[in-house]
Length: 221
Image 1: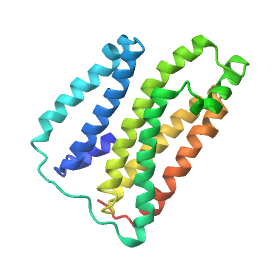
Image 2 (image 1 turned 120 degrees about the vertical axis):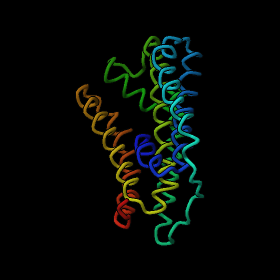
Image 3 (image 1 turned 90 degrees about the horizontal axis):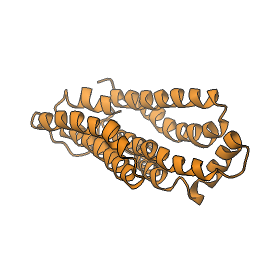
Image 4 (image 1 turned 90 degrees about the vertical axis):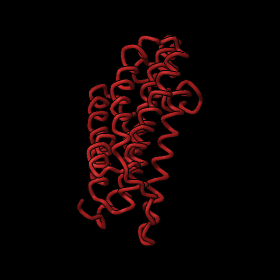
């Protein structure tokens, strides 16, 4: 999704693409680095977080002055309004889900998931204390990545998809399918079917219908 913002949005010199890429990067970094520090996992900041922030952030700063096309979000055709609202609302909801995942994976909000996780890997209804400690950190980069990804998808939904540009719809679908294939393949390898049923399939079932409907009326770039 971010690649599509940069490749196409920047090529058209559109400022919304810069805002979307920047928001995605900064939200990911804020969630991941702040909570990594809370968990005392400074190595994650040094080894992972700082490099994308500095490298990509520098390129975004340099590119900002070249993007001079400022455009408000276009009006939504009445016959497509339901699907647009569905898509954008889903992107916002999954962004919030990423934040909740990063902060609350050990709470009752994830009770069903954690129970299934414990049964699959620990033959118990509860995760051992040491597993909970690791899980609380492991969900930090996961949640930050989810939030950053869906912010980028939200910008695609708000601007080029509302204009009916098929490239943005195709980029969103490709992003979702790439995640689904990789995540589901690893899930199957570990026989963690609960993850497929509780996370992967519901996400796909929420996000794909509006994208597929809007694609039928979209136009080529």
